[in-house]
Image 1 (cartoon, helix red, strand yellow):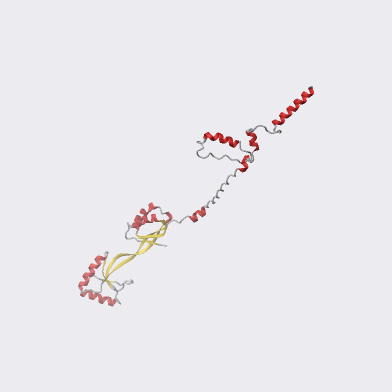
Image 2 (cartoon, helix red, strand yellow):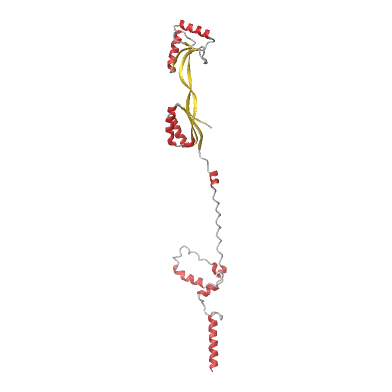
Length: 263
């Protein structure tokens, strides 16, 4: 009798153990959630999608829909189409090197070379003071040069062929009542010419010429006398158009000076 009870209990325990381990299958219509998750195919590839617009209005039917999804057969995962592959991001173009950036950058609109004036010393100092705020630095250079400068105007009779010819012309002047003259006998191109007067202004020289013409002196002329004078010119290179406009405005304050292009 005891043996029968022992073997009966042993069989019952074995059956309960096998049922608990699932060796005998499941007899209930609904399995537990962890068990169903283990039986699903490719469960690790499933992704939750965001709820569609208006999902809040269907909140009442949400629980019912969830139950239907939960009761779906395990092979539903196989029939679900795989999500479309996202487009691969475009490869970013490599950053341009500094050298390439400088090569492709548009060249600045610069004035290559501008030369201003032939300034006498006082005007040169005043011009430099006005240009200084533009801060051209090494782009501004000063050049020294000499230019012919009109220093006076002479009323004269052109050079004669010889000293004797000059003396005869001087005698003719005396006969016409002209007493103020001078025979030039130096080695200049005016040698054996006769000077009738030297004036600072051309107007004064022309006045004397008109008076001599009335006296009968028809061969007299007026000419400007020049000498080499030290001057300064200013060269500006690679300056911006805006700076060039400011420079032109300053140069306009010196009407006797010329602004010109250079190399």
